Length: 88
Image (cartoon, rainbow, N blue to C red; front, side, top):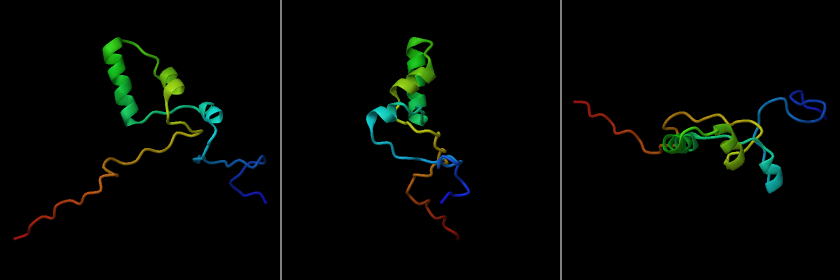
């Protein structure tokens, strides 16, 4: 059965995250960066001049997928609660 959200070859027509377990297949996926990666690359540029960010990301990144994942909002993973305000 073919879903309305898939192509004729069975692949989805929307961005999705898939698990790729084989190292060789994973290395074929494009690399992506995160906030920490960008900070690291900024420090490399500050220390040594011009670098090719895309090349470094594609060669070295551990963040790999067919589609770049959506970023989470600021403080999304901050699990502490705000202090309640005292009224009175």
